[in-house]
Amino acid sequence: MSKKKCDSCTEGKKVLQLLFSKKYKETNKISELLKKPRVWGALMGELIGTMLLTIAFMTIIGVIRADLVPLILFGSIIAIYATTYSLSGAHLNPIITAGAMATRRLSVTRGIFYILAQFIGAWLGLLILILFKNGSGSSLEVPTNLIEVSNENFWLIVLIELMGAVILGFLFARASRIGKKEILSYVAVMASCVAALFLLGAIISQNYFEIHASLVFNPASASAYPIFSNITEGIGQIILVLLAYFIVPMVGGIVGAFISDLATYFVGDGYICNEK
Image 1 (cartoon, rainbow, N blue to C red):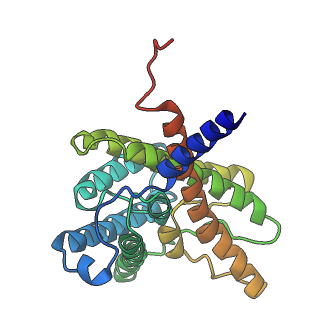
Image 2: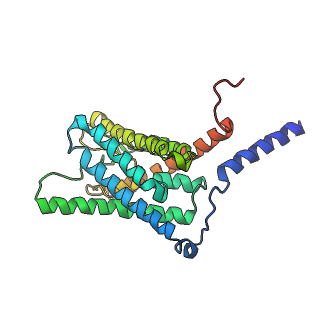
Image 3: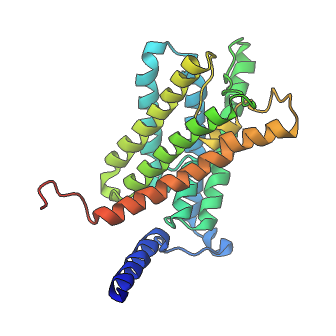
């Protein structure tokens, strides 16, 4: 009996070690981290990549012909991820960065800087669109709003955002195990996931909410949308918006990354189709 208990304890320790072991080598000290030019390059990659991603989100749905949206969206995201991967690993989303920090794929210091760069990039994307809109005198509403959060639809939005975030976190954790030489595999997985989730958000919003809105499954990009413009229920509604579009998605990304690591532990080096 004691032997079985010891075996269980050993197995449990192995699982915990896999889930929480440090998978990066760099320091957590801000002063030392910011001395490295590569870190500044990575932050520029996250900023520019998230800026371009936000512009793509805001200008494709509701602007381009519906039958061309999937093709143009997928192509745009492929290009953005491919060009930023070698700079920063192409997170471009606080959901992914939160999952990477929680599973210790990324230092907390670098992760926080990544998230700051992502939010700044999203707002720069919005600023560029506003400048173009004002300069052209166009009456086109860019960006269209995300689904407005209220007491009635809060749990539905949370469930959809949580589902998308868990999927995104899981696929990133799996894709991050792909070697640097196989950049196209990583880009294909992440771009396909981001494009599919964005289109899913558009389909859900139009079919279930019957409004021309969307869900972007990206807290940085979501912050640039006018999500706080129709607050009528005071601080309570603001808290609901923060939970639905920021906190819950990041928790979902963390859960997805941990599920990926747990699955990796059970499978080992990889699935073998003819194993006995």
